[in-house]
Length: 249
Length: 306
Image (cartoon, rainbow over all chains, first blue to last red; front, side):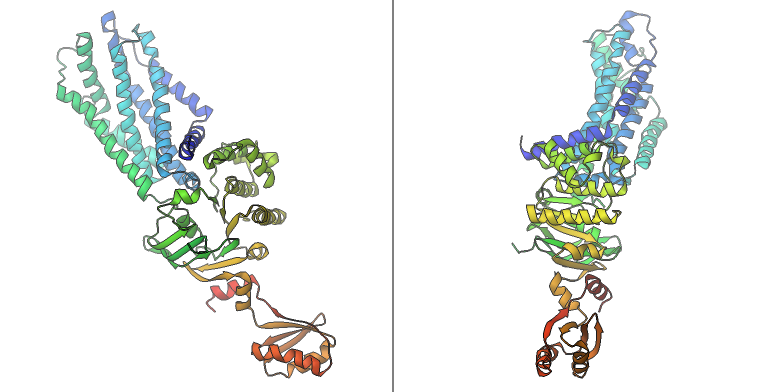
């Protein structure tokens, strides 16, 4: 391994150890399991069991949003505010290495823990490990996490204060969902519903939300490309700002 | 490349309407150099620019001949830094923290190096304690340890002796001197504790209101800013003092511990007249030297604009 790669690995280890202490990991695991278990098992027909993957997901998205906002705010705004970023950037660490390690460490850990906890549903709903809607649900988690992380990171870099960043991110994300309503494609739940409805019918031949719920291909594209586009724009802006513009005082 | 490790040319750094550095021309050679100035003079901002943490608003800043903003990574591979405010991760133990830093610097035999550095800075007994439980003095020592763990060519220390007890300060300064002597590590020490610098520095840069007001070899600066006071040791100080007082080049003469002190107006003629005067009255001239200005005198004079 050359010097650059060694540095990068060292920074990732630092970030993981610093931000994910044992109590934090335990909290993450417990919150992921709780948010999975609070979802009701409502189906009475075995062929509709897969729909349980959708029901109650609002709690899980709420937890996921809160946890991702808290961890990213701590990792970016917190360490900028308390001087840890200044210390780290005084070592031979490239700015992109720090940016990527902060983002990737938090993002992947949250996704891994929540995704793993969600697999409890396969057992609770008597679903196979090959159930396609389980993987669709994981994909939606990924989209949501990308979206939440990109928004939180951008806010963190601007406000440079952990608490303010956490509050601003949560209020913005949850407030926006509330304003547009659960059925809008602009909301987290709306996007999930559209994707679940479309791919549920495609894979199981059953409309999970009844005949009145119609989803077009355009809706599906919008539900996927919307958060991806916002993620891409915010991540590029944050990245350029972090490595070329940001001053650490 | 110039002989200076650090060079800034007309360096300007503004934060909105506040101008922190206003055409700073800093030159730091190899060795142990002092960087002094009162609070808010621009010392920490200068260090921030040198580390590539702050982007210059104008002018140039180079370390090892490399541009500080564009080549900060290459510079930091050869540089160790101790910041004024220590923001080390409180949840790590001292040992764990230094292990991470050593890995970032790509140090070989990390465990051994961490043990050595902890011992060198006097933290060997508390290496397994969490950093948040450290005292202020321990924090400073840990700061020095993390600055030195990568065995840098140059170490920048911002207020290294702040919050350290007198004995700890002496030990820390000795350590810096030893590091320079044994490993050839060069230091830039930013401080306002002048007595610390007097003991170890060979170069001094004085900053005031974002500008270098003077800099150079400490001996040369001492001569430049000395109060033109000479000390004379002679076999009959009372008699000689009377004769010296009659010289036109002298404005004041006094005796302390059998030594004559003279405040001189015209140093050039005075310097030639003293040996002649001693010979004339058949007195033995045991010593004759120019009293150099202290660091405090230099600092007071430069900072007040004299």
